[in-house]
Length: 291
Ligand SMILES: [Cu+2]
Image (cartoon, rainbow, N blue to C red; front, side, top):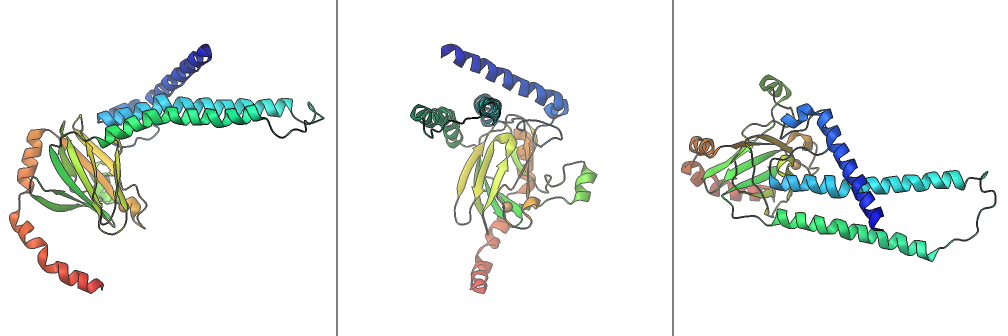
């Protein structure tokens, strides 16, 4: 048993290093580009946060070897059945229909496999859930079909980020349907609390390089967080089918140094006049108009 297990582990390790090798050779270019998908790359988008690294490790070292092992086992069983129990090799088929030890085994073994996966899965879920003390908060509001970003601590009023047109994106050499105007800006190495909600239907705020994805639900405030460990531009997309232009609400995040962030904050706000005059007056007529 021990030796079978260690052989399986070696096989699994081999498979996962093969995967990494393939990913590397298929995308030497992919190694350089973080924060967006790359043509021909294999595996998950590279990490820009510790949680993302742990997500990738869970996928590569736990899930992938199990998936490969099960797939190979099923393949071998299929081949055995085809070769040994075809009509020519086995003209008189057996008549029994039950085998209790096998049925117990194929119930218990999957349960054990799922429990094994659960250990690592829950560890990851707790890690994602346990936010360190946040350094700043960004409020994200999803709507059909763009995102609003607001920085309550910096007194930056909500501003809207919209997708670039194909022409704008190609002029700027940025990826169309990922690039957006007025990105979310965050300082590197800081814990950013992201509070997410929606105005109309359910959207989902997702940035793969940070390992975050959380539903934006009308009337409810969801929360996630990230701590980017490098500067750069990171893209995501609305990840909950939200209507005809679901594919046209990209997320662009700029991670910058603290000094650049402070300069951006100074350029952006605070704008107390906007904050003071924005809400109260139109709210009542708008509601009345709906009814
Ligand atoms: Cu959406």
